[in-house]
Amino acid sequence: MQNKAKEIKRIVRDGYAKAVTQNSACCPGGSCCSSSNKAKDISKTVGYSDAEMNAVPEGANLGFGCGNPVAIASLKEGDVALDLGSGAGFDAFLAAQRVGKTGRVIGVDMTPEMIEKAQVNAKKGNYTNVEFRFGEIEKLPVDNSSIDVIISNCVINLSPDKEQVFKEAFRVLKPSGRLMVSDLVLVKDLPDTIKESVEAYVGCLAGAIEKDEYLKFIEKVGFQEVKIISQSNYPVDAMFDNLKDAEGAVASIKVSAVKR
Image 1 (cartoon, rainbow, N blue to C red):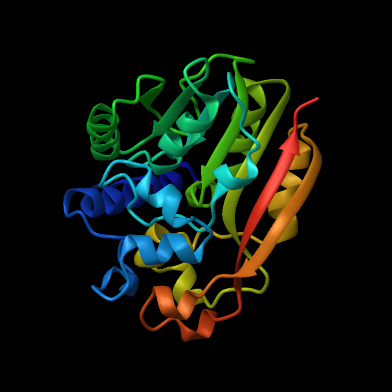
Image 2: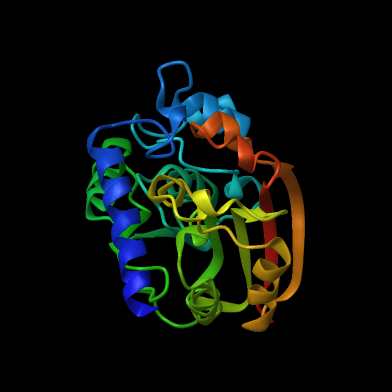
C-alpha cells in the first residue's frame, strides 16, 4: 500500500510538473487542453468571475480547479489562510486580497515546479502577504493551531490517504477554524479502466471516492458542522477523451466544516 501511495504521488507530481513547465491549461493528460478550451473558460465554468480571473498575475490560473473555494470561504481582513495544493497561486492570490495586509496566506504544494511558478507570480503581483511552502498535504509544514481558514481546490482528491489530509487540516486549524474545499467525489462507481488510468489519476478522477465516504473522513478526524454547500455534475466526457462510460459518475462538491 505504501509503495502504491508513493507511485501515485510520483505520477501526480510528474503530471503537474509537466503541465506547468509546458504552460498548458487545465487537467494534465486530458482533452481540455485544446486551444478551444483555455484555463479561463474552465475557471468560469466552475465559478470564477471575470473580475477574479483578471485580478491575479498572468500564469497564476492554470485552470486545474473544479470549483471556487475562495468564493465560499468568507475570508475577512486579518485572517491567516492556508491553501492545500496551491499550484501556481491562483486561489492563494485571491485569498490574499481578502485577508488584506494584516492577514496572511500560505500555499503548500508538493511539486517544486509549481512552487517556483507561484513564487515568480507572487513577485510579479507584489504579493507581500503570501508565501509558498514545499510539502505534502498529508504532512503539512505548518504549526499546530495557526490557521483561521483552509481552502483547497480539487487537490485532496489526488491524495492516496485522504483521512490523513483531514487530520493534518484539523491539526493546523485554530479552534473555530474553518475548512472550505472544492473537490471531486463519486456518485456512482467508475469503470475499472478509468480507475487504472494514469491520466485519469492526474486529472483527479481515478482517486475519487464515494461522496459519503469523503464526508465521513472529515467527521472522523473531529470536524463538526460538515455541510455540502453545493453539488454539480462534473463533465467527465468533456474533460477527457474516451471516458464517456464515466459520464454522470463524478460530482464537484463544495464542503464546509468547523473545528470546535
